[in-house]
Amino acid sequence: MPDAPPVTSAVFPSSLIPRSLYSAAVPSSPTDPVAILGASGSLGFGLAIQLAHTGVPIAIGSRDSERGAETAARAAAAVPDGSFAGYDNAGAVREAHTVILSVPFRNQSETLSNLREALSPGQLLIDATVPLAAAVSGKATRMLGVWQGSAAEQAAEMAPEGVRVVSALHTVSAAKLSDLNRALDEDVLVCGDARADKREAALLIERIDGLRCVDCGRLETARIAESLTALLISVNARYKVHSGIRITSLHDSLWE
Ligand SMILES: NC(=O)c1ccc[n+]([C@@H]2O[C@H](COP(=O)([O-])OP(=O)(O)OC[C@H]3O[C@@H](n4cnc5c(N)ncnc54)[C@H](OP(=O)(O)O)[C@@H]3O)[C@@H](O)[C@H]2O)c1
Image (tube, rainbow, N blue to C red; front, top):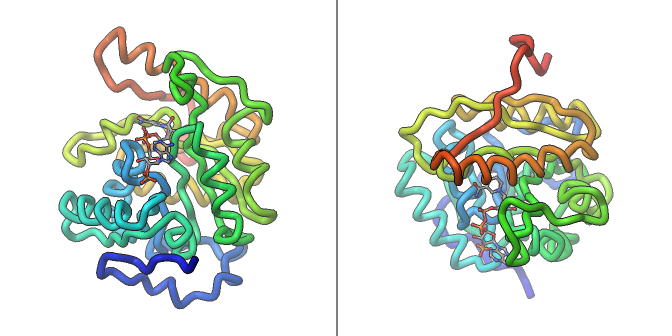
């Protein structure tokens, strides 16, 4: 079945860029659309409006293109000068150099399986998935064991060859991202096997005021970063807050 066309009026100039040009040697520019899969949900929507607020065009991906379009309209209401277009997940991926995966863990592998034909070598995949036990009706303060070691390593195993996988954003609260009037002031833990890929992800994420990205090491370290989400959920329940992470004693420039 052909992909559904975008339902909103925005058409991104990147549609004209041959997909073969996506490569680590051609890093994305702020005017390239970023695809967010799961943007109808809490984290994805917060990221969509925050990034759009900084001028990044957003391709909203959903399992259902109509829901993608509705989400794009909802985001446009929150950021009237933002650029949003709604698609099904494959359509959004085809619009973007960078793809943020923000879906529940129970659905991560299915989402990636369905995108085998849409994802291209050279694309940057930023995985925010956390394997919380809540994904299978367990406690949100417990983690699931993942055979690959982490949700990020599962994503790397499932993504087509040449897709560059970075893990980030697990400790950032969707509730805080969703409120553009609320100042952010926290770190984002970034894990991945290539420094250039982590830097590219960091340059995008740090466009959001108040977020600082910290290189936490190889992708296998993601299992630790992911588990911090469960810890923060436990803290949040006790203090009735949306807590975040701050790493101390770092230098001023972390990505030079
Ligand atoms: N919420 C947070 O504060 C936060 C913070 C850091 C990390 N995370 C992680 O980021 C990911 C997304 O979190 P979230 O809170 O935004 O999740 P969510 O609201 O429950 O779901 C996000 C989106 O995923 C899509 N989806 C795909 N398969 C699904 C399924 N089987 N059931 C429900 N939704 C499905 C839905 O979009 P469509 O229906 O449009 O496809 C949904 O809107 C999770 O892995 C979570 O652990 C969350």
